Image (cartoon, rainbow, N blue to C red; front, side):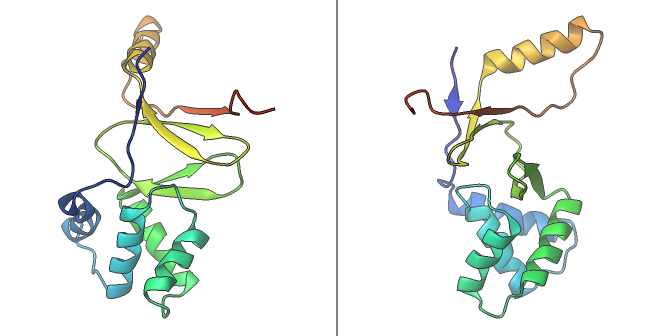
Length: 151
């Protein structure tokens, strides 16, 4: 089985503009604080929750409030620009919506979220849906585990 790990955080400058461009395309008024929050989300190499987004954004602009981050995240999510994940740790985490589908493996010990893609898994899911009389239009796969070498 071939598994491709998704390389987060190594986007070109053009790709980093995508989130702000999507906001503009959807007609959002982009205040400076929204731009900061969008940049923080776009450059995240992990799946931060609102509190972590606030911590990072307030390092850039100390005037940003936690309520501004909550409202902006809600606006971005409702607009389909970012996606919320609940990885069983009681926190909602966020990432930009991507054209490239990927799945997640969550380390239950560290909380690390590893993004990956497997053509075999994708084909198997489509085949299961087809055999049950469905056309697969969307899915989400989250695997939970602990490192094999951990005792």
